[in-house]
Length: 379
Length: 130
Image (tube, rainbow over all chains, first blue to last red; front, side, top):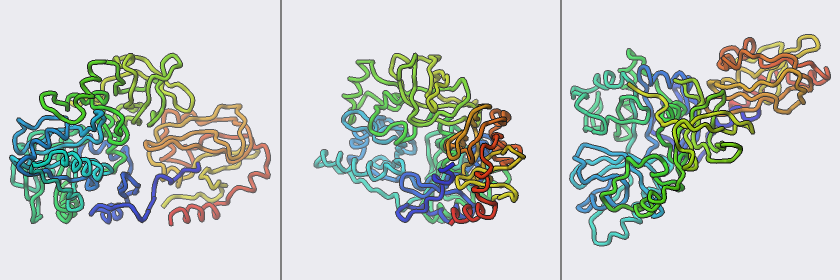
């Protein structure tokens, strides 16, 4: 096996590190390169960590993700233009999932956008896309001459944690007197947690399909909270979770991974994310998307469940009657279902749930069927 | 620390070989399973299949990646560990015992001598860590 260890331990000089890098090393994490960052892929094992999040709770360092503030008198007008969702009726303290697209309608990145105030927004692009999105936003702003729009990339100042799993609320409640059940899904509150001296933005959100919180704070607070939350979670079976399990968890829910399930080559319509597109306002890419919708003849992102043994992986071909009809963009063995699951795009004629296809794994067709994610249904 | 078991022969590509008369039992090392992580799929060779030294004869897949397993010697597959198909995690739990992959009929005994000893393989593993 020549590639043993290759994806692991790439301690390069150019990789960025989160404020928690030393903590990860102390915990014995395996580190990998991800989006230009040196990040933990696992601490004890991907499957063990995956199950900890499904059954108890897990703590993720997501400080590699970006932080961009958009504010000023005309911030709302800018936000409405730059992304697909609508914030006109979004109250302060709420957040929405959205896509930022180019004129062709192709998604540059997906993200959650929060409304911090009447004229202030905050968004968290994916790690490798932060600079791209920041520059894109500046470019969009240039075309809005005379408007008051301030865009700040404060990614270097902020860290972020995700506390996910059925026991997440019980654990975090130990660090605050604020009744966390008041934070509904896709809402946030600014709280001073535990012994920390500064406020964190605590939202009920995540990338696992479980209940849980994302906690954005200044870097130094993130470091303090990492230890405090791990300590508070001991009695609940809380574990630190790496990117490996983060990927299998999101995949079981059918959540998209930026740069893999799309990379400026798919519209939200193709990517099964039309629910995050609101047609009642003008936004970049709208015209192209409407045209595509009208034609009806576009590829669709679907889920695949393998009917035989095998592990679907990125770029594998999807075949029907010997003809290529699509490609896998993300795949794994589901730790919950113990079978191969994947996301990928197929020609629109094959998008119907139940369609039998084959996924080409090492030149062999392995039977699979089209399903509608999530693969793992939560009660 | 990962185990390098004395008495076995090794390849630089992290397979182990246990000589049993004119046959060789083959698997992947503790270091290999540790680096690859949770195993979820094994593609076994077929009994009767001829294998060449250095050529791929099995595939093991962890959650994160698929890895080829290379035959340490020339020979013929006489037995495969079917148990691994249902329980690929055995490769993680017991890489040198229950986690064996196949038994090969040795074509050329001299090839055994050219494999790494436990001592030299230990050095390979050590250097990979620095």
